Length: 242
Image (cartoon, rainbow, N blue to C red; front, side, top):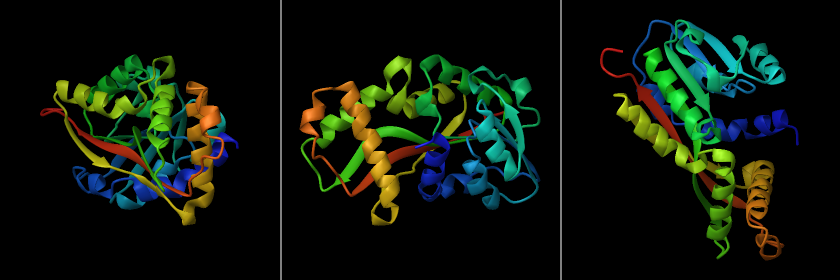
């Protein structure tokens, strides 16, 4: 499956999972300049824009020009960017920074730079759908926790933070004086999301097998029809005085 197709397949589940409560906690603004980091095909904007009152200008950052073209087609100013190397001058006029399914893909150093970028920008940041390393499968199976642990270790390969990212991000933001409000944002995959559930489960088990090759034999007939895949959303409010 092409990455663009995967993003399209998961978009409804992402929209259902993100915390609307955190959007309601955003400080009021007469107008918005929103920098969407790692925007992909623009799903964050399609979800968030209808929830924000007032005029909006979206600036879309991604390093993939094909994804940027898709995102810009539904509104927004595309900027081909390596989001791990941005500085505050790359976020002109920002009143809100957003990102979705991003934090767990970053290394420790990359996350530290992103945290500093958001704090130095002096505006709120809404960082959604970071995996936390916990999955509930129905029906439960004794293999579930072993596969989960192997998948989580796979997510940490190459120095990436994987499921540790939301906790590390919260700690770093708070050390810099920002207020962080966290809310759960679980995917709930059942019969109505059968195609997404099948694709997700195949990828989840495949990554676990790659990390722990002994799982290949044990998971030969290991299947599930429904799952709750836990994520976390973070709302970061700037330190007093900006």
